[in-house]
Image (cartoon, rainbow, N blue to C red):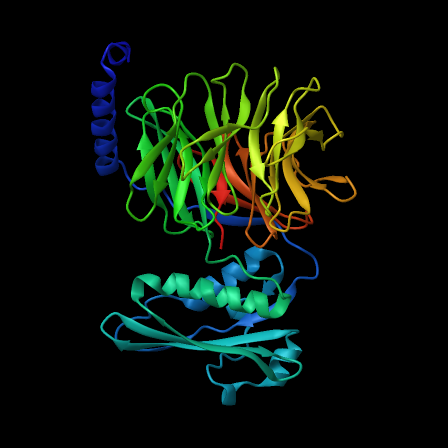
Length: 437
């Protein structure tokens, strides 16, 4: 490590790129995150998702009904009937015995089939029924390829969720997160992207130096993040489809906490190039910086409101870390949090009515602030919960926590009734970010 410090900047970069390439080739893929529902909601809607019929050669390529069941169960809003408890398993309307499903207490029924229509071509057909009315609520045919069947199942879950609740589902969205694993006597950091249920993890960046603060662009095509790959922080924006990335900020001192404006035209950053850390706005078109806050205190962790008119940020200008808000065009900051001596890492709900944050007291827990009445509700039990991120439909909050001394991800519903753990058997997982729709 001492020898690296003596290299020229160009040679340092070449060394890091070679090391990163070796890691991408030689390290095993990150294990799938396994979701465990640790507390479900009372009064969850009973629904039966019957195994889909298979019409094709060879074995069924994917148990689509199982994916749909898992999606609906982890939402906390539904209570899928176990397959073992199903008295019949219809795949066509004519085979449905309505009284049997009513006797089992099911409100809704889903049936369907998967048909092979050509080489690597499939058609997935499903129907959603109201059991007590005996009425069809939805019916779709969805074309798919084999590698897309899981995503097709998530699309079906989205349709079912929205049809019954009136709220868009978020099952086809993705999550980004940082993993840390010991490899060859040193820590290896990975920026990963996976489906919202933890499947299909993909490595975006791997580095022997810290990675942090992933943030999705509003179109879901790019990630901003902080990398210490040259032993000092720099902010990058990377396109997921191509891997192309651009360095946005590498000023002396702190370069951190990137946050996208809702229209994708600007990034809010934390920079200390002017002395103490302040919030700056970076125009991605003109490449110009505008300083938003000016304080001798620490101003950090900016978050845009959904309408783009204001930002929330963390500041200790009042003596302890608290959440403040400021107009996006500049102005006087206004304090938002008054409960407790520590409130930080705020993020707006998609409808702009709430802020999720880290609330300090007896440990660090995830809390929800109602911006209309100022009521603060603690949602988790700690002791080290951090980095909250809303699902794009506003129903759940993803966050980082500790489990038996290891970093893990967890999620909680905005009413605090549903709790989940996203577990992995290897390494630490931290700093989650939920993608937009």
